[in-house]
Every structure is written in structure tokens, then in C-alpha cells.
Image 1: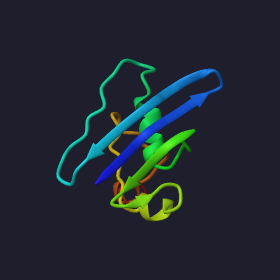
Image 2: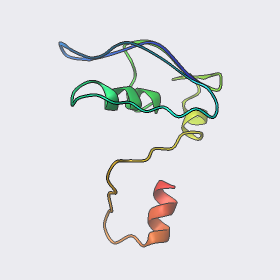
Image 3: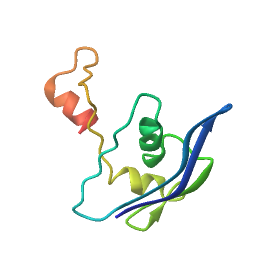
Image 4: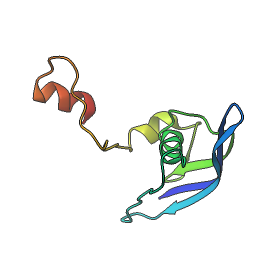
Length: 99
């Protein structure tokens, strides 16, 4: 289960995420939709431990961020909207790096 309560994140004077609450039970699928600048990417970066929120709590299966960051990251995967190929990696190297 993913549980987010009161998530807030600002950059200088711009509040990117303001009091977001999310509950995703096991087996459910979450989709974030919104205009550019709505805070979707910022929310996902907070969920993945890439950004530290200014306020709120995030937990995955009872593991709280940032205290259990490594365990949380080992359970997460990200599917980007565009494939990004780097350098001259072979397909197995690419999958090993991102898979």
C-alpha cells in the first residue's frame, strides 16, 4: 500500500504540491493527470525519494520515507513516457541498468 498524507513541496516562492493525500491499495493502479506544472512529476519524485517534501508523510507497505529510503526504492519502478537510450548500451545492459 502507498500512503501519502499532507504532501507539500515548494521551490522558492512556487508551491508545486500543496497538501496532497493519496492512498493506493495493493492491486490498484494510480494515474496522475494534470496540466504542465500541476505537480505530477514533483509528487512522483517525492514518492521515489528523489526529492524531500517540505511537509507530509509518505510510506510504502508501512516503510516511511526518508527513514527507509533504500527499502522503499527496492520496491519501486518507474515507467517513463519516453524511452531514453544512453550511449552505446546493448539491450541487456540497458535492462540491467533500468530494470
